[in-house]
Image 1 (tube, rainbow, N blue to C red):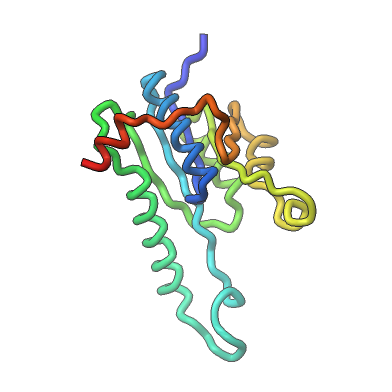
Image 2: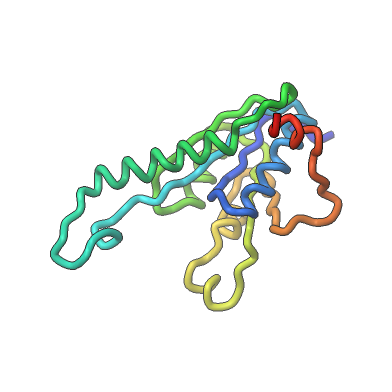
Length: 166
C-alpha cells in the first residue's frame, strides 16, 4: 500500500509547474497528505544587474525579487475549494534549486516530489542542465515529473473553475 503524508511540488511558475501543482493538489487530497510548494528564487550577483561601472543596491533588488516570488506563490496557492489539502508555501533563495529541493525533501520527510519539466533538449539542456533531472538523480523519495502540455487523461476540474470565478 502506498502511503503519502507529505508531498512536495517544486515550482518555477511555468506552465509545466502549474500542471505539477494540479497533480500535487489532487494527490494530496486523495491521500490526505500535506502539500508543500517550494519556489527557489535565484540569488542575484553583481554581474546580473546594471551596466559596467554602475553598482546597484543588490539587497533591495534581491528583496524585491523574493517579495514578487512570495506574491506569485500566494496567488498560485489561493483556493476557494473547501477540500483543499493542508498547504505550506515557501520561497528559498539559492542558485542551486535542485540541491534546495532535495535538502528540503530530506529535512521535511517528503514522500513524493513533483516537478514540472519543459522537456528542453539539445544545446540548451547541455548548457543549462535540468533541475528535474538533478532532483530525480539525488532525491530521497520518488519523483514525478510532469510535462506540459498534460496528457489527455488529466481533465480540468470544472467545479473548481466555477468556484474560482464566483
